[in-house]
Amino acid sequence: MKTGQRFDVFVAFLSSARFVTVLTTATIGVAALSYSVTQIIGWAGFFGVLGGLLALWAAILIVKRGEIEWNGLLPISLLVFFGWAFASVFWSGYQWVTLGGLAYLFAFSFLAVSVALLRDTIQIVRAFGDVLRLTIAISLIVEIFSGLLIDMPIRFLDITGDLDRLGPIQGIVGSRNQLGMIALVALVTFWAEWTTRSVRRGTGIGSIVSAGVTLVLSQSPVAIGATAVVGAAALALYGLRRAAPEYRRFWQFGLLGSSVIVLVLAWVFRSPIIGVLDATKDLDYRLNLWRRVMSLVSGHSVQGWGWIGAWRGDLVPFVAFQKLPGGAPDSAANAFFDVLLQLGVAGLALFLILVSLAFVRSWLLAVARRSIVFAWPALVLLAMITTSLAESAILVSFGWLTLVVCTVKASRELSWRQAFATEPGRPELPSEHRAP
Image (cartoon, rainbow, N blue to C red; front, top):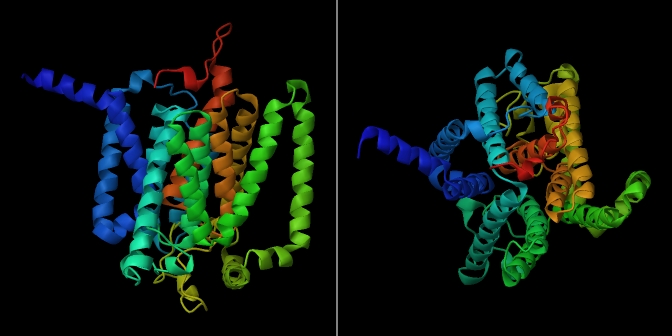
């Protein structure tokens, strides 16, 4: 075979739908299982895998460059937030670590953008579904092995082996709160698969049951509270989608007002709610952590200390948390406090704009579009944002990849830049109807 023919075969292989599907699943899988992968093969091995994924996606984007709509490629809110994070290199007291954290953030951003560009929403849902099914299945198998068969912890995966006491379980993702968040996202994903008939009925029902069992066994107050919020949002979305179009705006404002009232009531009755969720100990730990975060923000309130992502306990100011009662944290246990500490008030404002625009766009699409698959980004984003009130997982790996995927998909469906770029008299097709 001649060199030119070999190159043509390679290009055809890269651009094949099956290869892109497999690579999408592998990308989401590496993000979701980043904790267990690093525990098994180390950070060097993980970076090697990440580098391979980046190279393959870059090659595919080059090969498919003629099929991609490049106008309005990225939402401005995402670009501005990343730009501010990059600018923090100039005032960071740990510049090399900041550069490493930014490279990590950029890597998952690039992977997420690639997935969002080359996959339709239903294809993304299917890929997430396959990965989360595998994650939950392996987590339950490992927990059964640890808690019932050998009755001892698996320390290198931080599995305590408490399944014989019905939890809490951690699975292969590092903590019960992370497992609870994964299970909640899985519930939304499996529901979307089942309602769109993307999987067989038995597979869909079995997946939903396994995700629900995992969520309960995780005993994560954070995830259980977020599940209640997502469930209420799903019911509201169900009603809005069936309302007459001319009355939807009225119902949207009514829903917004009701949400504000519920938030106020939740604050007023926070003590009984915390008691029901059995989260008093976790809340005390977080309140102590957040007080220390605020004490460190005061001297760097506008710009923050510099981006780092996951905390490093050997660096200032994170050494101040090493003797915290309850253990040294690797995050602020709240994405918004984390951004405030690392990027200051300016960075927090940009992050709030980013997640708010992403959610509002996704919600409007979920209400207006006929296909139920458009509800997936809105409900997943709501789950991630709600969880972010007590965890920082949205800022790294799986959480960040999911946020960027949903943000890019929503932005490309409701982009003012594309609206202005559309030729007069030529309607713009939704991206779901363009060639992948």
